[in-house]
Length: 341
Image 1 (spheres, one colour):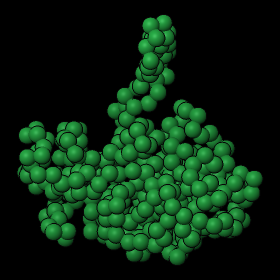
Image 2 (tube, helix red, strand yellow; image 1 turned 120 degrees about the vertical axis):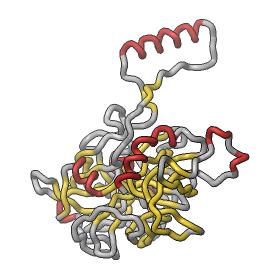
Image 3 (tube, one colour; image 1 turned 135 degrees about the vertical axis):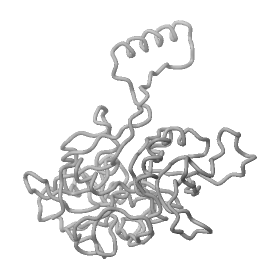
Image 4 (tube, one colour; image 1 turned 45 degrees about the vertical axis):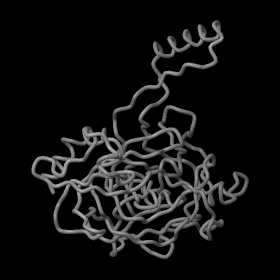
């Protein structure tokens, strides 16, 4: 797989510019939905199209250098905050992983795991940035350290008056493909142009956005519980976490989430770069991701993904009706400076 990973890294930007392509990674070639032993560069597309529907420059080659490519249709990838309401949405004390939770400004996601701070050993609640920190870049007004976290999430009836389970402790900032400029020169030019626009009665406002070339590695955050007695570590219907393990192609994984409960799927792609719809109008790129078969529904964001031995593999954060995207758990733990209890 080293050769394939090298080629994925080498050609990533070139491949991602192709029309209809939303991701690329390493995996095994699939034939009629069944995985083979042939190692391939996996190209992820919104939908499979005939060559005559694509311009010549956007046709995916059968091979890249000496390695075969395989095209997998995965649909539109988006963050999986809540759009529904099922039976894991009630208030629970003590609360446990697998149920509804969320920053006080968002709808709802999933309580992923109980972890502990590497330094202080204090217990923390693990989920996604977009679940516990409202998709913040750290340079906006979307969230601040100390913000209330509700269980259940607001979409499921959670209220600040009665349902605060903890407070935002820390997060890894999310970088979108473009963001509001913090450059004083750019902002000054923007103000001048908008002043001219008002004088000539131009019916639009000008806004400068900074292009972000850096990809995200994780979508994760932790909250500090109001009291450690208010949470318990066993994942609903799955039990105790038994350590961690690296992802492998073809391995079956399982999760327990707010919306779809306990579901299983196989790992299809690793070391993937994917483009994710983070809002209705904004996208973000994530690299070194795990892609499984359909494992999740909206509201399952933040679920911990395990193997059959209950070893943590990844943190679920996005998906479509055909696939699910997860951050490798080792990256999550390193970035947040946490460990499992």
